[in-house]
Length: 75
Image (cartoon, rainbow, N blue to C red; front, side, top):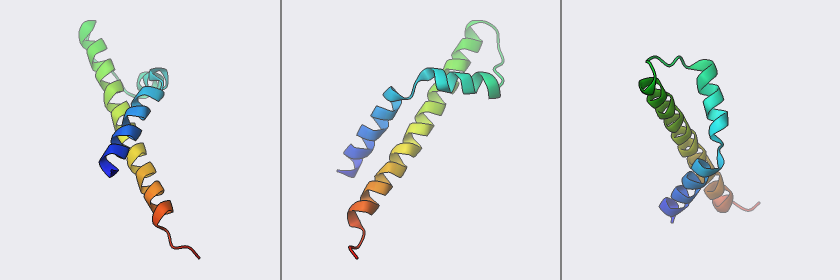
Protein backbone atom coordinates (compact mmCIF):
# COMPACT_ATOMS: atom_id res chain seq x y z
CA UNK A 1 0.00 0.00 0.00
CA UNK A 2 2.82 2.40 0.87
CA UNK A 3 4.57 1.75 -2.44
CA UNK A 4 1.39 2.37 -4.41
CA UNK A 5 0.72 5.61 -2.53
CA UNK A 6 4.29 6.77 -3.13
CA UNK A 7 4.01 6.03 -6.86
CA UNK A 8 0.68 7.88 -7.13
CA UNK A 9 2.02 10.94 -5.29
CA UNK A 10 5.25 10.91 -7.29
CA UNK A 11 3.48 10.54 -10.64
CA UNK A 12 0.97 13.28 -9.87
CA UNK A 13 3.79 15.60 -8.85
CA UNK A 14 5.63 14.98 -12.11
CA UNK A 15 2.53 15.89 -14.10
CA UNK A 16 1.33 18.86 -12.07
CA UNK A 17 4.59 20.78 -11.49
CA UNK A 18 4.88 23.08 -14.51
CA UNK A 19 8.08 22.78 -16.55
CA UNK A 20 8.22 26.58 -16.76
CA UNK A 21 8.89 26.92 -13.03
CA UNK A 22 11.80 24.51 -13.14
CA UNK A 23 13.10 25.89 -16.46
CA UNK A 24 13.19 29.44 -15.10
CA UNK A 25 15.11 28.19 -12.05
CA UNK A 26 17.60 26.36 -14.27
CA UNK A 27 18.06 29.38 -16.55
CA UNK A 28 18.64 31.71 -13.60
CA UNK A 29 20.86 29.56 -11.39
CA UNK A 30 22.58 26.75 -13.31
CA UNK A 31 25.09 27.51 -16.05
CA UNK A 32 24.54 25.32 -19.13
CA UNK A 33 27.59 24.71 -21.27
CA UNK A 34 27.68 23.38 -24.79
CA UNK A 35 26.53 24.49 -28.19
CA UNK A 36 23.21 23.90 -29.92
CA UNK A 37 21.73 20.46 -29.45
CA UNK A 38 24.19 19.47 -26.74
CA UNK A 39 23.19 22.47 -24.61
CA UNK A 40 19.47 21.77 -25.11
CA UNK A 41 19.95 18.13 -24.08
CA UNK A 42 21.80 19.24 -20.97
CA UNK A 43 19.11 21.83 -20.19
CA UNK A 44 16.29 19.29 -20.54
CA UNK A 45 18.18 16.73 -18.43
CA UNK A 46 18.61 19.30 -15.66
CA UNK A 47 14.87 19.97 -15.73
CA UNK A 48 14.01 16.26 -15.57
CA UNK A 49 16.42 15.58 -12.72
CA UNK A 50 15.23 18.55 -10.67
CA UNK A 51 11.53 17.71 -11.19
CA UNK A 52 12.14 14.06 -10.30
CA UNK A 53 14.03 14.99 -7.15
CA UNK A 54 11.39 17.49 -6.03
CA UNK A 55 8.58 15.01 -6.64
CA UNK A 56 10.34 12.18 -4.85
CA UNK A 57 11.04 14.33 -1.80
CA UNK A 58 7.50 15.74 -1.82
CA UNK A 59 5.90 12.30 -2.15
CA UNK A 60 8.05 10.94 0.67
CA UNK A 61 7.18 13.83 2.99
CA UNK A 62 3.46 13.60 2.17
CA UNK A 63 3.52 9.86 2.88
CA UNK A 64 5.23 10.43 6.22
CA UNK A 65 2.69 13.13 7.10
CA UNK A 66 -0.29 10.96 6.14
CA UNK A 67 0.94 7.94 8.08
CA UNK A 68 1.84 10.11 11.06
CA UNK A 69 -1.68 11.61 11.06
CA UNK A 70 -3.24 8.17 10.69
CA UNK A 71 -1.18 6.55 13.48
CA UNK A 72 -1.00 9.39 16.01
CA UNK A 73 -2.37 8.64 19.47
CA UNK A 74 -5.79 10.05 20.21
CA UNK A 75 -5.62 12.30 23.26
